[in-house]
Length: 116
Image (cartoon, rainbow, N blue to C red; front, side, top):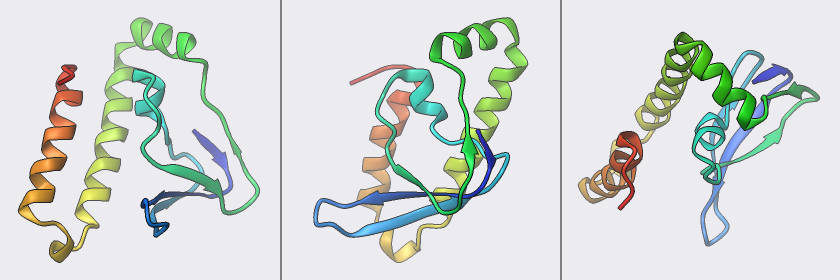
């Protein structure tokens, strides 16, 4: 969670092109998916301004989620909102049916907990 400051989330393509996904401010959460499934975060983050971010250790987070199921619902809401923002920001001309199909093939198994 970003307590203060701003963080830019971005992705770099293999050819070096950098695309900013979004800039976050205080109160925003980033990296939640990686913390839950131990995967590498799919984007990079860098501080835009001086700030402070924190996240509990994975074991603490899992214990909190087990003890407080409502917290899990809130984390899911935040992750879902971030995914919706990022996909709705894509220009239609850049989102071809093939890209949508590839994205679905990538995301659906992760959403259901199954890996292919």
